[in-house]
Image (cartoon, rainbow, N blue to C red):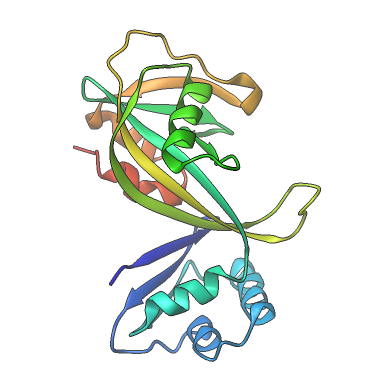
Length: 208
């Protein structure tokens, strides 16, 4: 049975299978199926608290995770961990190291979206998917006019990609990307010290 980790900014909400039902407030809300308003009220309190993590442990954790997820506006994104000669490609955006990714367009497959986003954000072509990587999940309040203030659940589908070209990466400036850089696996501590919490486990898969 799968485990899930959902991020709210730098805070973590864990969903784990287990015979012991945790007594966290969120577990109680989801187990009793108390409704969307109860979930959102909990998140508001959790966001403003000093707690950094809460865990939902339950024998039917998959059901509880889906109940939790269904309370939100759903957005799917896709991105890539691009490799060339052992190096990994990162972008620098909004003051942090990040991986190239973006929203999946209507009618677009996860794979096509991931390849497109890498090309758009990094200026490289002829990269290809090698394998599927674990998804990441995070929730946030929408900053956009049409959905302003709504809670959003975003799943990002990740793919490892290979690139053997010689193009010099070009940052997509209009998306706030100021640098695209190749890192050796031995240099990933630089990235991990200044990246998003929800990416650390994914990036850590490649660290030496």
